[in-house]
Image (cartoon, rainbow, N blue to C red; front, side):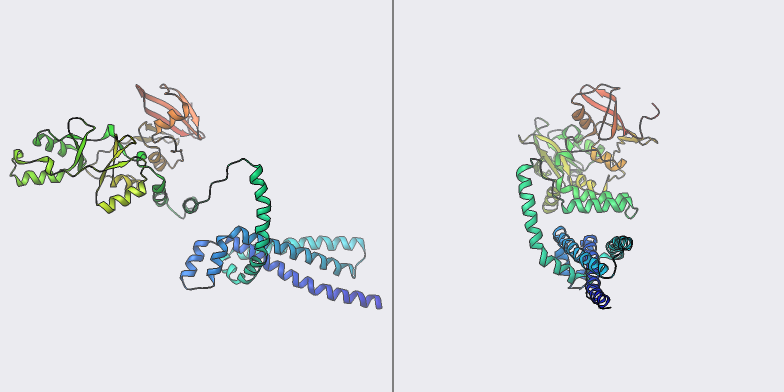
Length: 431
């Protein structure tokens, strides 16, 4: 009788801590999962709506990995203590090995449920759940973050001395936005055009003018000393409104002329072109380095209220020109009007491949076909093939790289003028 009373007392004294640590374990499991799943953007939005309690939660998500590690460590400690008290409670009234085995299995199932059920519950509304569980999150972080920090330094420091592998590039805010928009596009929440525009805005800060400029071989420039009547005819036949003017040789750009300025001057002279001085109508040329980033050039265009700049290399040689419209097209796509000369350049096929002019920029092809060909080492699709092949291929030669198949269709001297390009899984199956 006394022994049974002693066992009952042990059961009661062990059962109370068991119940307490079950609650603690559930709370910590839910706290860690809610903090890990919380979206910082949503939290900032909730903070702007006036909920001041979110401020600390936003701070914790800035060091999310360390805070979550602290919560998980606290949960592990709670689970160990729970196991000790649960074992004592079971042994206080059960000695049969078979029944002990049943209790052990039940304990394992309970442990799994204590971990899984809270995770599922808080996943429905992680931000609100994290706000409710903020005291538990903050207490765990304050008590155990110093320990977690010490463990990180003790483990990472020796690894850095031994490992010669380069560090992984930092996950930037731009990359986070880009991947979030891309995920929403794949899930159907964002259309392709909107995704491309967001990506275009983000790319401006990494895109040099050399990648988007109109190359010097495609520039429409005119001799400043040509007769005004001939110059007027040339400007009228051009689809552009601003044209660089040169003197003596095409590389010596001396100004930029707006077509309307010349027309107004001729109108003021009552049609007498002999009374018009072109040199007084043009604006001074604006030269910018080819390494200038598109985002910086866009700000410079807006600040100086100009629309055209000439791009030069490190030796001061003109390599091309860039306009405000060129930069805007990197965001919104091709801007065409009734005066533009449309050059197709890309002809898609039903099998997912496309016939592509060699001079088509890789970025434009990616945008049109929704591909992800790299543009780090080359600007045009022909340049990419030459870079990867390490040679100037002949017509008929095929190459496979970056998950795409490239077949050279035409070549003029040292220039690849036409290719057939497509994903390896889709193209050339019928051949």
